[in-house]
Length: 147
Image 1 (tube, rainbow, N blue to C red):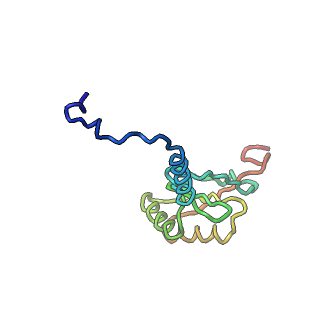
Image 2: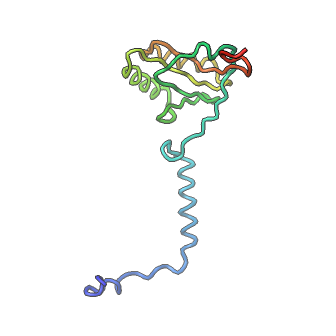
């Protein structure tokens, strides 16, 4: 063994007899920190969006270059996680520079306030987006191509 010439093993502290309390304290602190300071990289939020239903919504569908999701609480999520209004404005400017004709899709849940959707649309147009589309679903039986 490598420790025998220097007698390092004799100088080591013995293992603690009971570390159960320390184990639970560490586990509790980890849970507390993830609860208080949740990371978008480790604990991704679930997006349970219920889109509004509009007859003929699929007929007006076009391809978009990027999208944002807005929850009922007004929180805005992108592929990079939740963004505040100032970070959203910067994110929209960066996405608008990436394409020649940038188009934004706003996936707003059906109970999102209309002023929040218009605020995001206004930010997108100021950032340089050519068009902004609000996502909706066709009611059952009224889809494009269905009778």
